[in-house]
Amino acid sequence: MITGHYHTSFTVSDLERSIAFYTEKLGFRVDRRAEAKGAAIEQVIGIPGAHLLIAHLLLGDFDLELIQYMAPPGVKLDTRTSNVGAAHIAFYTDDLMKAYQEMKAQGVRFLGSVTEGGPRGVYFQDPDGIALELVQQR
Image (spheres, rainbow, N blue to C red):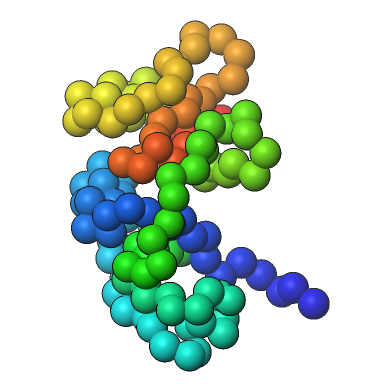
């Protein structure tokens, strides 16, 4: 029986670049780093010859695991949110417009813009094009 949430994970193309984005732009902190290869990780993920670089980042009690596969090489997926299997994480902010403007000034790529009425949120992307969302707390 499932009893809770452990972490959310994204595969990234450049672990160091992704760590910089999530820590410098979104306020995460690095909790731990690891390298995994050999029979144990191959058994867990079901990929022979797997060699992974892993970082766990924390934002409050939310654990985001970033993985860069050193082997085998992966392919870039089309992560547009309309595609089946695409996912995103939504983050609360107390001031959506301020967060949007500050992040945009830092070079964060936004997929839309903040609306005056209706939903109080906006989608943006990490360096690999993974969709993320800012949501105004009510």
